[in-house]
Amino acid sequence: MTGLERLFDLALVVGLPVVALAVLTAKELRAAVALFLSLGLLMALVWARLDAPDVALVEAAVGTGLTGALLLASGLAAPAPPQLPGPLAQRLLLAIGLAGLLGAVGLGVATAGGDPGLRAAVLDNLQRSGVTHPPTAVLLNFRGYDTLLEAIVLLVAAVGVGSLRRERPVAIGPPGPLLLELVRWVVPVLGVVAGYLLWRGSDAPGGAFQAGAILAGGGVLLVLAGKLSAPRLASLRVRALLLAGPVAFLAAAALPLGQGGSLLQYPPAWAKALMLGIEVALAGSIAVVLLMFFPALAPARSGR
Amino acid sequence: MTPWLWFALSAVALFAVGLHGLFSSRQLVRQILAANISASAVLLLLVAFARRAPSGDPDPVPHALVLTGIVVSVSATGVALALARRLRVRPPGSRRR
Amino acid sequence: MSPRELIAAALLAGAAFFFFAGTCGVLRFPDVFTRLHALTKADNLGLGLVVAALALQAESIGLVLKLGLIWALVILSSAICSQLIARSALRAGVTPWSRR
Image (cartoon, rainbow over all chains, first blue to last red):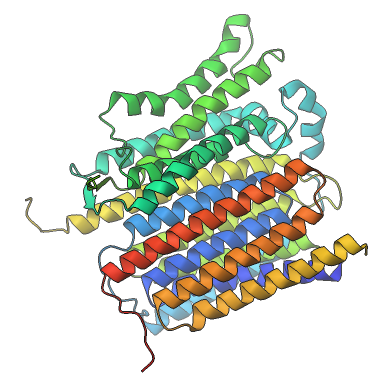
């Protein structure tokens, strides 16, 4: 660990709370959103420094990219009430409470030991999981239960957003020729990159979540260019895509029951195929769910 | 002090900043941002703890949990923003058009 | 350090200078259009230097090509996005700064 690396880490460690404070005290809401995006990128750097490349990919794609687009699309249209500070007593109480929290939790964290955690358990059983990349094995095999429930949570979120949607999409201007060119070049590349990340997830950082997020990004571009209409919950195709992930996962989980095993106990010979199938279906569902979070836009048709 | 400890303490500070913003903001979108910041702080703490071993690979289980966590927190943000959009479009007391 | 590492370090230092200059431009220039100009020019060139430095230290041609693809995508999207931002700023009525 060279001095320069320590300096870099120190810059990140100090920068994170400082930028967060700037986000919450920025005068204008637009400035707050822009600073929030830069906080997301700083966090992606932190994930890289902590040897978590999968998390860095998801943070950059989903946490920063898609959340940023979401905030810009929905958070800034109408004027917001001014940001006034509250009464002094309330602020003092809040400050004291938070200082106490900081002290207590910080003390607990500082006295935690250098425990390697479950690393050994995962590496010992990696052969039987069907993939060679530990986080993917944990995500889809060892802790498959968590990911299954997450797929269902995504479905619930999609239903929630779909039921809040207004009937008529927001009309925006026609897409300019440059936007159409961008879509023509970039969307196919996004499709290839998403497929590549999905495939590589079995032995390198990647997987269903990153692929789904990139596909959702491509979907947003297509909606902006008027090539794709925003997904509506009433459409049969959308419902099928939303259900594909959870249903595939449930089917794979229930498969061992017929052969005397328990839920999610993939037979080792089929593990890789099952996980790849689950990931493909899950990536599609994730892409549609993330795309549904955006307000429905209807670009005017450009006269061509 | 080892790097993972620095990041863990930074996560605690980040959480406090997010909580402060959540309680002292009047604007809905800013509260959503503050909640997001606190959630990211918790995830940072998990990943920092995953890096506790002095050498070798990090612990992959918290990485998987954090992956799930990021996607779920984006879903929560998406639903919250949809609600915020709806609240703005139909302010309380207005008549249905 | 080997000559290859020295050149890579020099390229990275140049990239840092360009990113710094671009950020100063974003913070100090008077209106949207000039800020966009500073942002895209400096950041594209800065990223190009970073990619060149990494390509020098890459282990395979495949990695070099992937890095080049990243740079090409960033240039394409940032150029088109800056045009879109400028066009919508113009439509929203922002008048370009002129020397008084």
